[in-house]
Amino acid sequence: MEKAYEKLGPEKNGLQHEYGPSVHILAEPFTLGLLAELGDPGTQQPRFNQILETLYRGLVQRIVSHEFPRKLIQRETNMVSTTPKGIFRGEVVDPDSRAVTVNVARAGTIPSHLCQNVLHQVIAPGNVRQDHVIMERTVDEKGAVTGAALHGSKIGGDVDGAHLIFPDPMGATGSSLSRVIKHYQDHVEGSPAAIISAHLIVTPEFIWNMLEANPGVRIWALRLDRGNSPDDLLSSVPGSDRRECGLNEIDYIVPGAGGVGEIINNSWI
Image (cartoon, rainbow, N blue to C red; front, side, top):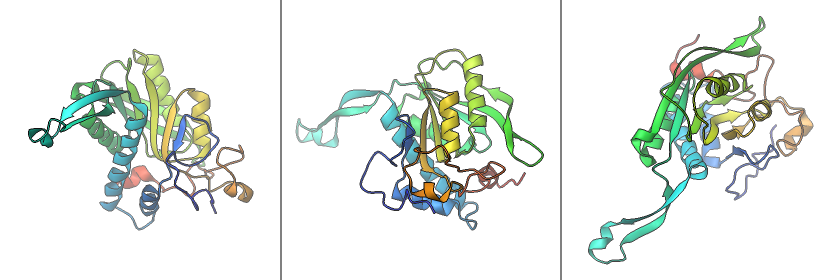
């Protein structure tokens, strides 16, 4: 069994790993407990989406605090009526930042909407946009992933200077997300300030494939799953051995959470 989550310690920067500085695996007891419930066979609607919302709101808040530019502000508090010292001064997320969150349908629909709502709390509403892309895995006769097909998109403008965010619950192989990123690079005007992927669970294969195909991408996840790795690797530092494996023979995550898109939508096709 996996050893990486047995003694998390007081660290605030997430799981220790060797994937590089652009990868953040938060591995926090609060979210790990909710993820365990999310993946339980008995967890169905509406509880599943309730957990999904809690997890993504927290994840996006962490991403915005870490990745977005800041601005020093001064703002009166209710105490200003009794003392001139009733003024808060400190750094906040720059409200003039620009963000684009991408709904990679179908598993990404709710996460992207949640991301948009969180961003509206701290960024000028006119600076937050949600795009939509219709994707699906392509598979062989055995069900193993062979790539990804893009069937359509609704993209509302350029991405110049924006934080381009892809909230996709399961980062399995990286094929779908790489296909979407390439679509933006080839067909959408402007250079984003950052490309950020936001996930509940990722595999080692996803991380390596994404970093190789999209240098500079910033990967954020709540958990890393490598349950199909050789036994001796399950006590090693994640990212230290390329023999790590988090996928089964048809590219589902192990231990993972099963068909998340099916459960989110209560649609079993």
